[in-house]
Length: 225
Image 1: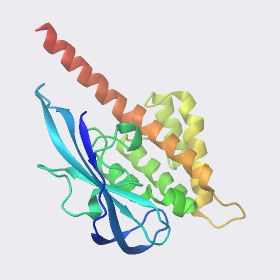
Image 2: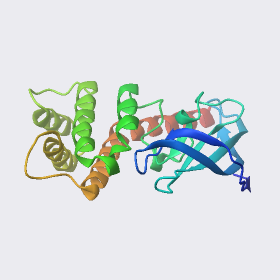
Image 3: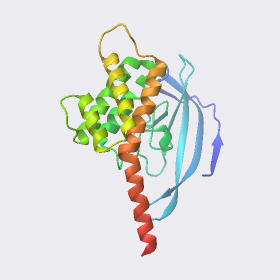
């Protein structure tokens, strides 16, 4: 991927939410970046797409947020919707976002994108919502059982995810309960980070890996024709 970078001191200002300190304030654009990304069409055609990044700085905490999108065919209409860091976006590699929209149910993607910033701002709330996201996965996979614990055990028994995932998802369920209910224990920053990693591992195994396997099979079959 080739790119060129340009730093600017332009006085452009936009009222934006800072996902470092959670304040809504006028932020100044302090830099910009233009480049190209090599993309592959589903029929195998490859082409370059121009994209642009803008860096805005929060005057309250000095945190930097990055906003970006493709230039000719943007995914998002407003600047606020183009936030990349510290919130996931379709422009980032898959390790920095939940998943591609083609193989993961939209309801799960939408919920994850809404709750992801809560990891650092409100870890308890993030934990409770991660539990809810697990419930969506169980419902989508038609898990059997009267509660989340039983449903997760059913998915492990059916091979929807490996059996060792059962312990991980049960821990997620337990920590989610702690975050959702009043008690003496609070979820901290590091708990939320591990929950985030665990949840994306579940999504990777249940949705993304099977989709990639199928895509590779299709490419292999096309070469053998």
